[in-house]
Length: 376
Image (cartoon, rainbow, N blue to C red):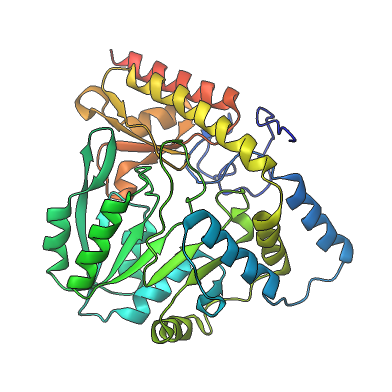
C-alpha cells in the first residue's frame, strides 16, 4: 500500500483559496481553520485523471456516464447497505443547491422547514433563501456524544413542517446516528407527514472505529465524494430519490438553475469511487491522530470542552464565555481563524477544521493555549 505524506505543508496562499486568501486576514498572515476542505494533496489517481483531461485539451459539455452511475450504486450498496436503482439518481452540481431545490419543491410559504441546531449553516439559511418559516429543535449531550432531543423533535413536527433537513454524520457535532435514532427519525417524520432530506457527505470520514455510518434511506438522500477525497472545489453530487413523483418534482426545480456537471467533476467522482483504498487508508489514521491530540489538548484547558467525534474532521469546541469572553475574536486576533458557534445557531462554541498537517494543528493548539492562559 502506498503511504501518503500528510505532514507535507503546501502553501495555499495566492491561489484564490476561499480558506487561505480571505481579504480580512492581516498581511502578517493567519492560520485558517474555518472552511471544510483539507490542506492535503489529493490522491495520485485523482491527479492522473485531471492531467489526462487537461492533456486532451478540449473542455466541452459533459454527460454523466453509465459507469459513474453504476459505481455510485455499488458504493451505496457496499458501504451503506442500501440497494438502490439507477433510475433513482439525479446528478447535481452540489448538495447545498440540492437542499435549496428540495425545500423550494416541497414546501410553500405557509409551510415550515425543520432542522436540528446547531447545524451546518445552509440548513437554517435555506429558509430565508426560499422564503419559508424555519422551525428548529436542539441537539443535546448524552454521554460523550451529541444527539437529538426527541421530545423537542416531536413538538417541532407538530408545527407542521413539510421538510426535515437531516445532517448525518452531523456537522458540527460529529455524530454518526445509530440505528435506533434513525428509526425514530423515520417513524416520527412518517407520522407527521414530513419529507426527509438527508445530507450524507461526511459518511466516509469515520473518526471513531467503533461506529459505522448508517444511511437513513429516506425520501431524498444526498451523497458526494468531495469531502472525503478533498475535491470540494470541483463540485458534483448525487441525489438518490426512490419515489418518481418526488424525483420529478425535485428535478423540475433544478431546471434553469443548475449547470451541467463538468468533465473534471464527473471523472474525478468516478475515480474516487473506483480507485484503490490507499489514500483513504492513509488519511483516516492521520485524522484520528490529529483528533486525539486536539481532544486531549482542549479538554486539559480551563473553560474549554470538546466531545470526541464519531465522524468528520470538524471539532465542535465549547467555551465558558465568562472566562474567555469573545473567544473566537480573541483567537482571530492571535492569528487563528475558526468559525463562531452562532454561525451554526450554536451559542458559545467554535468550529475548528483539523484536516491539516500536524505542524499546523500544533500551532493552532499553541495559540489556543496562549489565549486561554492570557485570561487565567
